[in-house]
Length: 129
Image 1 (cartoon, one colour):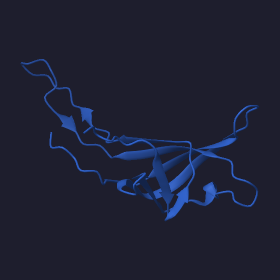
Image 2 (tube, one colour):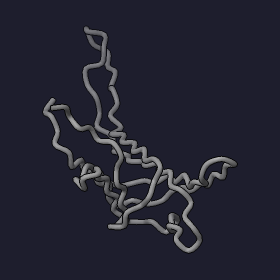
Image 3 (cartoon, rainbow, N blue to C red):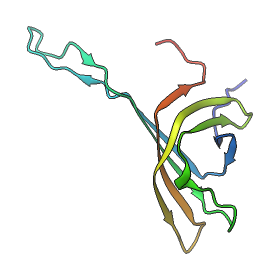
């Protein structure tokens, strides 16, 4: 029997399902190589930086009166689930940084929302490396 991979997702902000076209999380742990002078003439270590979590959401513009107040989102919890409702990832203390809107002749109008988060939890089972 074949494996079922994650396809479409359900985006939830503070318990409210959000319709979205795409979601692009970016997790950067800011680890950096520390070059040193030594006999091997190569770096032998790294430093641990301050983690940074960014999310880019593209969501359709909703009908009048149903619009999501993107600019008001602060200290939110953003959850990503698969179609079965199984939790995959959670971002904590989420806040909106930037909002752009795109109107096109063919296709729907969308909001491009850039968000930041202060913490991240991977809810998927992981494989030890």
